[in-house]
Length: 402
Ligand code: DI6
Ligand code: FE
Image (cartoon, rainbow, N blue to C red; front, side, top):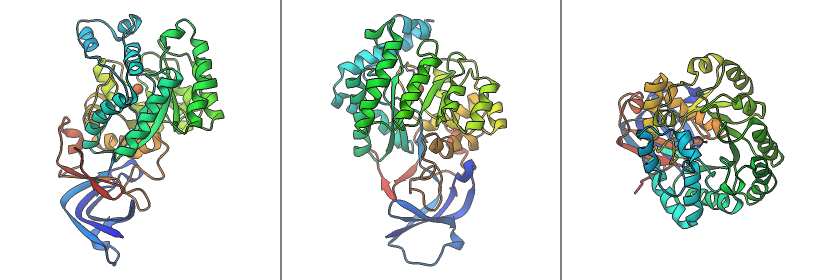
């Protein structure tokens, strides 16, 4: 049962470039792309249905490769405190920050977490996202990390989205382990990760490598445990200071190292050799009013793949639009609109280990795409959020979001 989508232009994003096909057509076969190219070169054949896209621009469905979508509570009060001059680190030291979200997340039922995450996720999906990564990390014990990861699986079942579920149990020290970080890391490695992996709830393992979180030596233990379980790793690194977590991640063949404002040129080289994706999070940079820029030019020169993500989380990036992140990547990081779009398609797929099936419009990949009512692809980065007129197709089927 093939469907012909025609009268459109396509930024296929193959190889991480626009790779534009003007006057294009695309053939889907069930949930996959069977053919894409110039309409004039369409192979002869019958199709069950022909859909006229009225000159729209096709891109791959957007991929948000770094989110903390599932959490309880509200941190807008901390936002107000920060506006009065209190720092993120000070708030964390006083028991706020991640710890306050942990309290609220532990107190919430699975159904409550599902309901609030569904609402946030729906915002992202309405913006053209068809795949995303969602981390735990606000439970910080077996039962509550499990609760979050189960919500990830449920969200994927109930919404038209592919979700990569990441265990970030090593996000922060839970209060009951105050002063005993090594003991908590032991718990993560010997109990939490093995149990949740055995339950099939974990696609990848992440940690927060930072002076106010976990040391490189502790992260290394988490990575070793992940490796024993056959799970890929990724890392929050170099967000607030330089501990060379990005190099550590690369040495463990991490899918990605994320944030990276404080990474060094040497870290960039190590990541380039390993093929680890640099995930930049302009929403967190903006919201924390960070001034240290990630080393974009060095990443470019060394050929490191650069992905862009929302980092949707209650403390440092309450971002409900991935397209707004495209604009921020261009405005704040001086990326080009083409680089930014590649960062939420081709390179984001690689950051999730999904590059064989996602991230570009090419024959054989999943038929996840968006038909945008725009006249140039740069318009996707140009508008500051808002809802562009579009049709979203996932697994070959048009979806509508409530
Ligand atoms: N880095 C971040 O920006 C978020 N987590 C992390 O490791 C912050 C999470 C929060 O403040 O709740
Ligand atoms: Fe994050």
